[in-house]
Length: 461
Ligand code: SF4
Ligand code: SF4
Image (cartoon, rainbow, N blue to C red; front, side, top):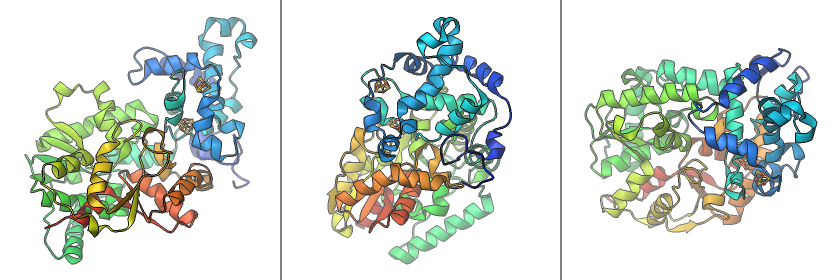
């Protein structure tokens, strides 16, 4: 941390001075926003949030499974309970009768500006992977507590610029978070068609803005710039299955599946999902296919239900993994696993797996597409978060990258090494961004790949 940046919690700072404004008094504002968060019209996770604030019995089980606490050498400040208690103590002190009358007796504490600043930083040390919630005997969800704390902080103007300005604000204004305009998008699509022609020796037409297509495929727009192989793979799969499909450009509305509101703001989440739904309606697709993006899947498949009931939207929503799995079963995609002879392992993204229950689809797909599939251990609901979740993959300011490489990233690197695989497959852009860094930082002799990329490579024509 540079000398000019004030230390407010540990040796790292994820929030810049402009975002945090550590000298500005905000305790009163915080308490007002927290009061609001405790009301029943907090429509996303009110009940689990309040129960999680009430129910912890301090057994410590969550710490045994938390990647950041374990990898930090069990530093108390990174224990899930330490972090949750930062908010819980405020809750008890200001929002319960015993805490108001006898604070010392119930472990309640006055909120100070210093504690507020430390809380703001600490909620960005947790990736909201919810591994702790799976293990908790009381069903306490520390991830939900963290998310609610981030929401309260955003309500008083404290949020990372990467998520707010470069994420949600730009997406709503330009149609996608990277700010790609329509002309540049169309150029990129043409370039991808050429790349496929050169690599495979056949033509794949990538339709754009086709009205009334059966499938509208919406990728994390960052994939066009950083993980083009995934976008090309998906196009080849759509083509091979003979699907009536299309991508959409920003001139139709939103053409980016991401929703950074998931990580810190219900208001931003709602604005984006409504704009995405309007875009799909405008194009008249029957099925919205969510590309390889974990948090987009959570937003479209689950969180959306709290806002727009299924009967109010005239289209289905599917992950691209569900579609590929279905098409392999139906014989619409023919694969030769010998075309991917290297050992391949699979990373369960927290949002697809632990939150979305999508464990078997990617495994069936990879076993059909790769000759040597290897599980990493542990996997499925106890898989280790790679550390890219919760927006961290795009938060690399200052020395924060070092934090996530030396905590979650270090455990993941050890887990990857133990598989002996030379490719780690995953179906989430944020995980891919994190793997790009983990492989580089920890010098692993392997590469990452999207599931679509491996499937496209195995296609038999
Ligand atoms: S496992 Fe659950 S009950 Fe036990 S300390 Fe952690 S949050 Fe509290
Ligand atoms: S959600 Fe994940 S990172 Fe956060 S406290 Fe729980 S296990 Fe640790």
